[in-house]
Length: 449
Image: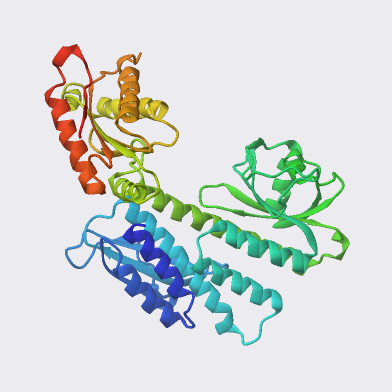
């Protein structure tokens, strides 16, 4: 786990224990200041925040300060979070700040009702607890389980489901049914379905009214095995990207539902949508920390972690191949970096198709790739590299196709630690690069012993 992601989890855990806005401000300042690239952080309350711009010049030699307004459900300003960077913020850092801002905002929202009134109804307490839970976990499945429990309890619902729609297609994200009516397992999320006429009308009504009662007569509900005459109470909340999250409760006695029930589901839909957004921001930050943005392959940091894990595992053999494109610099120099990037994406596509399903593929940087092959000896590893050679040699593309050099080392013969195995494979790669023109071959796989 990266330092940034670990810091976000620690922030959420500490915010869950805060009992006053001052505690939230202290925790936010200390935990955010500990994140990589952050010089300082502060949280001001709504009265002190004013109307400063969202991005302001720093008073010291930092490149800039990022500002996030934190608001309650009625759009009242709760506070402003300001983070000053030691260098211009990169995409991962900016994504981490978005996650942190939502965590702090959720903590402030959880405290606001207790500060405004000493007594709260059971439903108010449930909403407060759910808001607090959003500071403790970024796992959307856990939040949905809590939403499902309170909806079943308070609205006497027999089914609770979450859909997402962009206005053209609709997708079932979560449901508290493990199986369909005929006993088949549900595998979620389900594929998108076109937004049919029934669902479109319901969405328009929900958008206009906030929450509405309807009948289950649209195709997106068929996996839930609801009867077309069954009643559902639906509420929706719009995300920043324009998508709408739809919370549906299948109810047995719709005539017993009142205005308070409708308002309750509306607030739960809002919290569900925010939890989904937080989970996606966290996942984007995690993927950004672990994946190469160009090829989508796992990066060098993950490579070292997973190689060590594999060598510590029960397998008696593990092979490592380091691959390098020959004269790739000439491609960039002659054709430009856009073409070079296209070549790297093409090579990645070919490698993904030829490695075994158990193999682990990485981009270490530049034009260097790595393949960790669990259970493979020198011979099996050589076969994988040979397939890669053939695949690249027979590429039918208009892009320049550099040849490939590879160095292969297998444990335990070449070493039993990640460092020893990497060194052996790297030395073999160096030899392969030196011999790449021998015999007219475009790729030479050198085997370390």
